[in-house]
Length: 191
Ligand code: GAR
Image 1: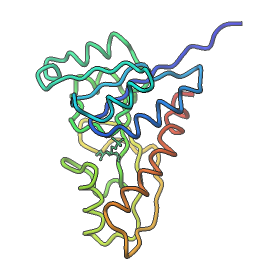
Image 2 (image 1 turned 60 degrees about the vertical axis):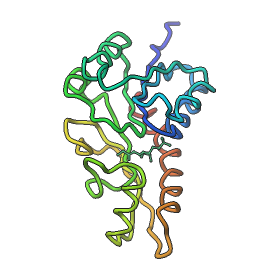
Image 3 (image 1 turned 180 degrees about the vertical axis):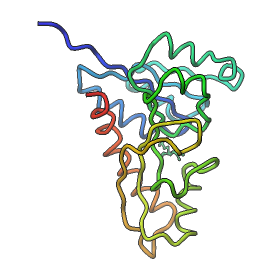
């Protein structure tokens, strides 16, 4: 019987890497989809330790490397089926977006189009939700285009914001949603 083609994911992450790790764990159990590589712009990021524990290769790069399109060269060489941004802080250049149309996705810790855009990362997003007295927040998984947080929405899940909620508390509840849904949505997109 012919082997089903293996699908490959490359993850971009800048920080702690909890989403990256959940995605890696999810696909460790599946033969047909693999996390091929993790790329980071931060050589002290927590994600590097997490990735090492799962024996997934990782590469960190600086701004010069990024600007010289060397990351694009790596992507072209490995030709992933999906590029997954999991807490990646830099903008994806147009050169990468045009080479991988509809193949780059991001997760945002709020219900876009609210609380998105430049500088809206991690806790700043939850702070903005609380300041706006929103009654709900959640997660958005979307395609990446040339503007921050504006690509076509693939999936959203909401939770209520309670009067007593702190940034820490919302962050924890939102991350729980991210860890539950991001791997499942990635799998659906690849199948
Ligand atoms: C996640 O909550 C993700 O939604 C957010 O960064 C966090 C990374 O956490 N991304 C953004 O805010 C993008 N604008 P992690 O490093 O533990 O996965």
